[in-house]
Structure formats: C-alpha cells, structure tokens
Image 1 (cartoon, one colour):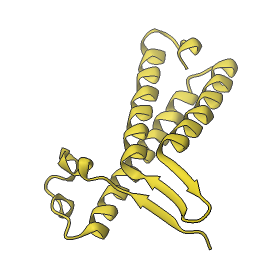
Image 2 (cartoon, helix red, strand yellow; image 1 turned 180 degrees about the vertical axis):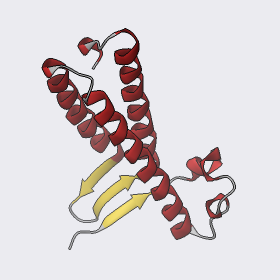
Image 3 (cartoon, rainbow, N blue to C red; image 1 turned 180 degrees about the horizontal axis):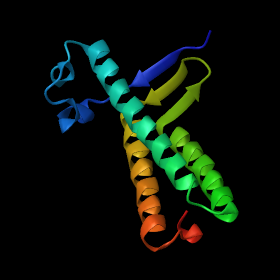
Image 4 (cartoon, helix red, strand yellow; image 1 turned 30 degrees about the vertical axis):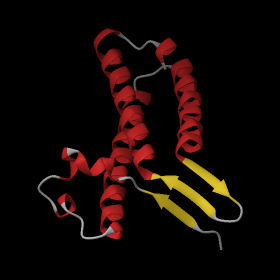
Length: 125
C-alpha cells in the first residue's frame, strides 16, 4: 500500500474562507487538514460547475479545445502541486492545489461570461 502525504501550509488559514466557523482556529494539524480539504472540495465543485456551464455554450471546436486545455491544466496542477517518491509515497501540496483550482474556476467563469456577453472565443480556451 502506497503512502499519501498531504502538505498543508498555514497560509490558507489567514484568508476569510475559514472565518466564523470551527475552522477559524483548528485545534491541531488534522483539524487544519480537514478544513483545508473542505475548501479544496468546494473549489473543485465550483470548477466542475463552471466547466459544465461553459461546455454547454461552445460549438464542437470549442468543446474539443476546452477538453484539451482542461486536461493540460490538470497535468500542470498535478506536476506543480504533487510528487511521487518511490520510497516515501505520494505528496500533495493542498494549498497549491486549492489556489490553482480557484484560479482555473475563475478562468472558466470569465470565459463563460464572454460567451454570454459577446460570443465564445475559442482562441481564449
């Protein structure tokens, strides 16, 4: 069985994402990891919703381009925010993955807004 290590940096705790909740002051590292994972899961859900919304506005060429760019983005996120070590296992920097996911979700939302307002520009996908 391979080991999964998650690197969770405290930088995310300074944001307002944890305000007014039990995650505002986590008791220990495991509580902090739980809270950071919840933020990541929400960012991932928003990314998926934005992706589906945008996909519904695109023509066949735009759809193909978006799928290709999404796969490239996932590969980049994975290489930037995780690594495999045969002796130690698999490492994930959850703060990095969350920031990149939030950025990509915003990118997709911006492309959707363009499609609705002035037409889809496949060259921006």
